[in-house]
Length: 330
Image 1 (spheres, rainbow, N blue to C red):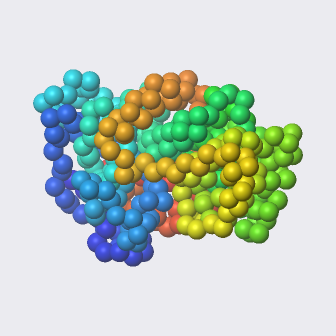
Image 2 (cartoon, rainbow, N blue to C red):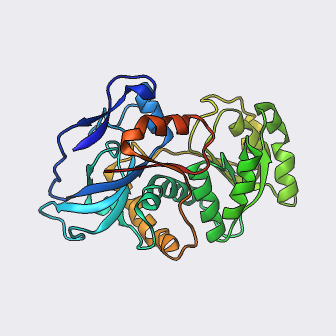
């Protein structure tokens, strides 16, 4: 099969399309003919040598999500049939023509989604849904999403709206905030430079009638994390999903104590198979129907054929994207 191979650590030029051996499904696995995938920040980090794949995953083939057709079944597989349209997340190797996955760790692709749309779904909607679950999100709560124009950010905004909450967001680009309003964002906070984050608490008080944010989904970390503490409601929950703005933050611990805040760190890639099966099951039950009835939808920034993988990486690295950068397979 053809796959994107990381030939050495470095820039997008180190990526090559090579012929490699196709994986074979184990007894409880399905072999999926990948029709589309998408890029994530983890793929950029892996290419640079800063984020190794977990044990058991492909170390030199990136890709954390896929959508495609079941091509073969392991001996114990009963849930699926050849030709079924499925999607899911894996630890690596999805930027290839075939992947294997446990039969319980894939979800059905709704008939209204084409392949590019399906490929843009798994990582962002599972991540956002899982984060809201961990936060104990409830209808009518106020949720702030940092990096609201990202794939996860836009998925989170849509889920918050669909589940009865109020979604707010931050971005360094005013245009992204305006575009996100189409997907349910009530109001946004523009961060032209990190120093502007000192006004985040004022913004939060204004848009929540002084209540503050019940939940913050923080994809940025760094100074965003510290500023979020000031903007939280009593017993608020911060879910730290990423650290693109920095891995360290100076925080006021008394804010955490006084407001009785809950701070939860989360990562999807390195979770056990049992955990991935559990979240995929919940995603299938609660999120896939929302995709099927068009209450929520994938947001695609751009689509690249597999052979243009280097250009796709450059697009994601530009930080100009709104939604997902999607790959289509031959």
